[in-house]
Length: 113
Image (tube, rainbow, N blue to C red; front, side):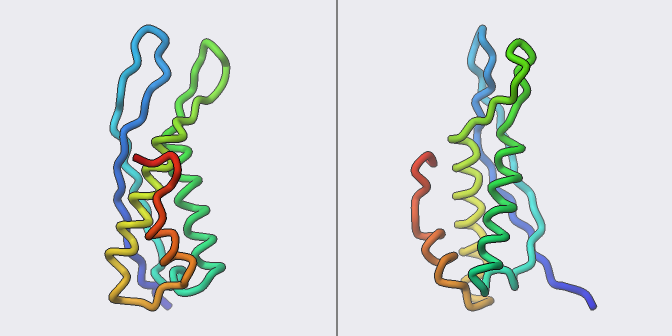
């Protein structure tokens, strides 16, 4: 059985942690998802968790001098916000969206632009 999937593309600017000069790079979140996830609370939780995980990874950079990973929280939140809003715009007329997803699409994430 084949499952229908959709793709989301969202972009944000990430601040790179360069000590000498702060610079920006554009990051793009590209992910396939199953629109059926949008119809249940558990599905929404799964999808948003996947979006957040992918966004954190895209907005992260290794800082060798510190031996640590820097995560640009603003970048990550912006990507998730853009992805949720794009998914909502793409799917609102196609499937009956779970109330949680409706609320997420209407809410501005605190760290997002």
